[in-house]
Image 1 (cartoon, rainbow, N blue to C red):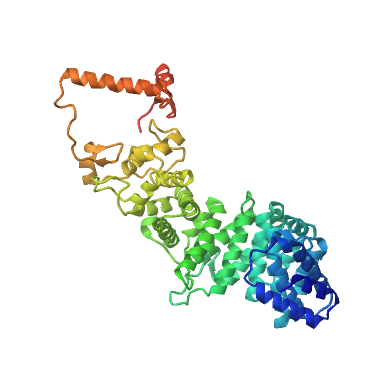
Image 2 (cartoon, one colour):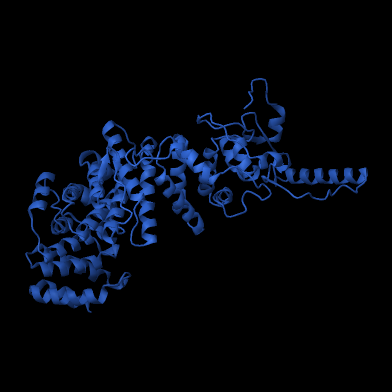
Length: 539
């Protein structure tokens, strides 16, 4: 459809004709996401024209059509100039019932008292969709949102979460997420002035239909209950993403601690729920895990401390169901074999910190991930067990992935180098040991309980024959120098020395040694400064 014709008609045509023209444009461009650069100026004029129509008092059906047009145009960040103004954002905010610029309490009152027809609600939804696109694509619009205090209007709508319809809630939460993601300064306003963390927690509590049976314990989900409906799942994920942004900064204070423990309890409840599809269940659990990583580690005891539901006697009465869900999630992500950085490292980090600070969590995970060794004839990285998969990740090409996997196993071994090498071999663990300055052995800084790990009889009998580098018992290899004369051995040894010397002089390799503190240094430095063993104590 000719844009010139639409733009010219917007100024002089009546409301019905405008709606008819824009409906046709919307139908033709509903799936358009890349636009002709030659028509850029015309699309800017169309934006201006549509905003001028919205500024007039027109019927809700015409408003909805205009907003649909604006939503299509807002996919092109180059034409958002007319919208990313104070006037444009106030028009959209008003249509979305955010009433930017008004006081929060008054805004909340309007939101609660207004009764909307279905047509008027569609206008609100379309306006929220437009705002999401405009805020995402325009830094100028983001600044206007700050200037007109759009966050106050959003939090006022959060107060009415129990009465809103699905799409109003969904796009309100998405707008909170976008604004808090793109503007760190607004994060502080949301959190400190508007108490958005508490409001979003209440949204989650209502959406997930949480019933409390203790201060930080939700009732166990009914095993016979239907899966979480798709709409509730969508709103839950948007709320989790917004909460993730708002909990990124440093935390502190009794009020915060209480709020975070409530969030941890809700997230535990969420981990026990299923949605309509396995993929969606995994997706919402992924968002829950991301948020758990932001909470203070001291709050993670809420995941296992559920007195009403009870727990396992062998783990001091703690309930490890949620931890089992996290282990299962980790397994699924490892089995996918891709996108480890975003998909796997968050759950590994969460399990690492939980194990580091909570003995029962560490013991429970270690029993599954690093059970007592029996068969040591196969290399640690070969096989299909959880341990095999994690050891393989210790030499992954992505530095973040391999460090996270190695740290997880190290913590399960109570940060004991000897224990780690028993399960992984020196070759796989070398990267972690270098980074930690533990090449000479020893322990990490964290203090752990004194309970000892017992080796199996199979491991004890095989231990003298284990290659410490590979971590397994190797098949006997033929001795290559067995049939050589002494002169031949000396010749080969000298040849090897000369080869190393040549590579060293050409800076292809650099001989290194281990310093007394366990770090690597050039060999000549380590030879000049021999380690002092007089103050060492046996482990």
